Amino acid sequence: MKMRPFFYEQGRKPNEPEGGYWWIEIGVPWHTIHDNETIRHELTRHALGVWDWMKNRDPLMKDRCRNYALEFIGQVPGKRESRRVMGLHLLNENELQKREAFFDECAYGGWFIDLHSPGGLLAPTSEPDSAVDYDSSLKEVALKFIGPYGIPLRALLSKDVVNLGMAGRNISVTHAALGTVRVMGTCGVMGQAVGTAAALAVVRGEDMAWVGQHEAKTLQQHLLRSGCFFAASPQ
Ligand SMILES: Cc1cc2nc3c(=O)[nH]c(=O)nc-3n(C[C@H](O)[C@H](O)[C@H](O)COP(=O)(O)OP(=O)(O)OC[C@H]3O[C@@H](n4cnc5c(N)ncnc54)[C@H](O)[C@@H]3O)c2cc1C
Image (cartoon, rainbow, N blue to C red; front, side, top):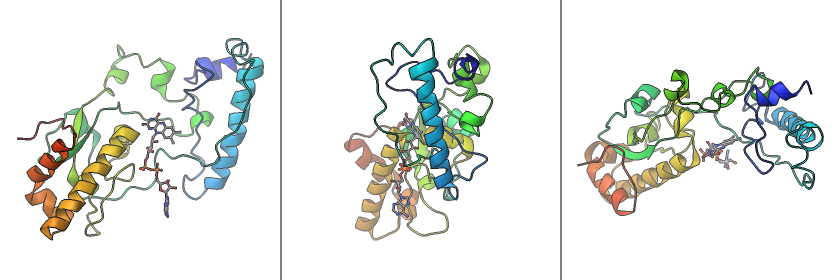
């Protein structure tokens, strides 16, 4: 049972047979872009090892897993973080923690600053907050719970390529700020915002940066009418 601390004390709890295995992740020493195939093979090996632990060894899980069989292991490695494009504004975690009011707010987020340990399964612990069950009475955990905060259109527009819009984990943010903006719901509302900005730019015969600078309120009104929400209520 030497493996038990690896899972139960180092933040990798297999609580349910059906899900919650976000900690099956690796990164360094491999390069997330150039070593994609190696990472895929490594992750497959680790997934099989975790499954073996749950199915055959873990005293808390093996009985619950007795009627489960492994059907498939995904073979497209997901990325939490890779390249980001420098935008007209580089959004940082301090602005998000302070819930800064941006004149060109076009989307919002609110997930906590969810930073994962480099190395993942190879690191001594997974995300340290997970090892302490996200206990918000601990200052270092509480500091990461933030939002709702606004996202400015400028962080979704490239500073060097005219009219190149971003939505998702490639936007113009610091590493720590990406820890909160990268979640799927937030990526989705960014997509709606930048798409609406593009449509407005076409109507006005201008580029998206012009829309952000001169028609931020019009953009916000379009987004509000299509059901969007803003963290810092636009006037
Ligand atoms: C293991 C893991 C668990 C996660 N868990 C959660 C969770 O529980 N909840 C949550 O909200 N978020 C979660 N996330 C984060 C979230 O899934 C991602 O941050 C989000 O999906 C990023 O969306 P995206 O559109 O920016 O990028 P992606 O979803 O990576 O989409 C980029 C797309 O571009 C395609 N592409 C790349 N290059 C090219 C090219 N040259 N030509 C054409 N297409 C190309 C890719 O194939 C891909 O489909 C998780 C991420 C990971 C890795």
